[in-house]
Image (cartoon, rainbow, N blue to C red; front, side, top):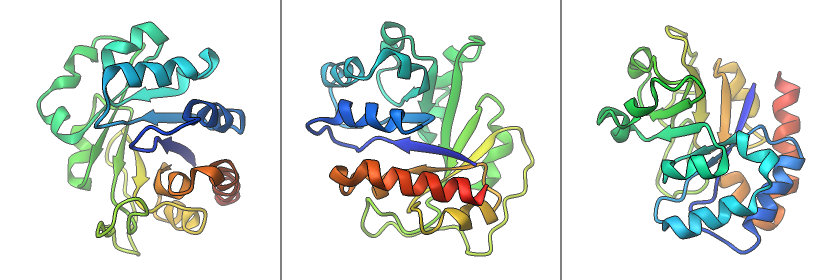
Length: 198
């Protein structure tokens, strides 16, 4: 099962070094999402990530920076997808596109996207009053080639449940970034639990 890490929404001291540390521990994919950031700060963080890891980064904002950092992964929020903002990348074979949806009904329409986040699956760890919307007995039935990644409240404690629901992977956010000083140890635990579940 795939394990994706989404960045802390705000910048913090030592962030680039910590991201490099997560890559050193085997993080396969990192989604850089800073919704209230400026381009200069976004660029500075990217510059601090070691070049050999940048191929594993997906950009949520400032897609135009991709050329400067040899990045080929681009994420589009649901409303951006509905506006067709991803269409500029559809004719680029090297580009990997991802998106988000809150309904399984939309998944068959996501043919341009390699994978989509679906959630929140569980009560959000990073956002208060953001409950899960996926029933506990949910079973994902594939009707398209787009992979479906569980998002929302993911931790080492419920990774096995995510797999039982038949998701292709899980995205982690609050479990890591609510305590950045423990992020490396937390990632190790989540990764181990993910590997144990297959």
